[in-house]
Image 1 (tube, rainbow, N blue to C red):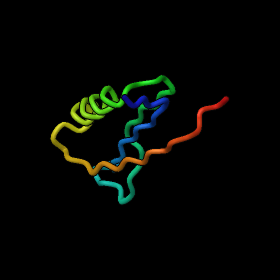
Image 2 (image 1 turned 30 degrees about the vertical axis):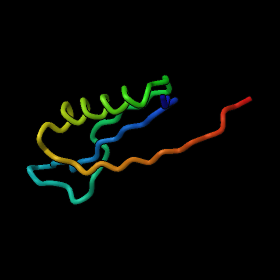
Image 3 (image 1 turned 180 degrees about the horizontal axis):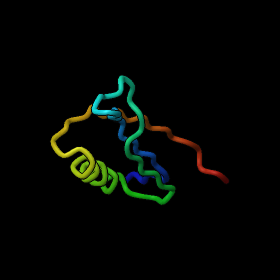
Length: 72
């Protein structure tokens, strides 16, 4: 079983100002943690966040994974 030691999840979107949509995206929502979570729990968290944050909006998802050595 894989354990994830820390994670950062960002949701980007476009702001509206005076009824007009911005051309550039910015971070709209963010969740970070340094508490350990299992891979299965992480996938459930991603699914739940997508439902809560985006509903049926539809977003592209990009994931970057880094493996680091364990400190001795």
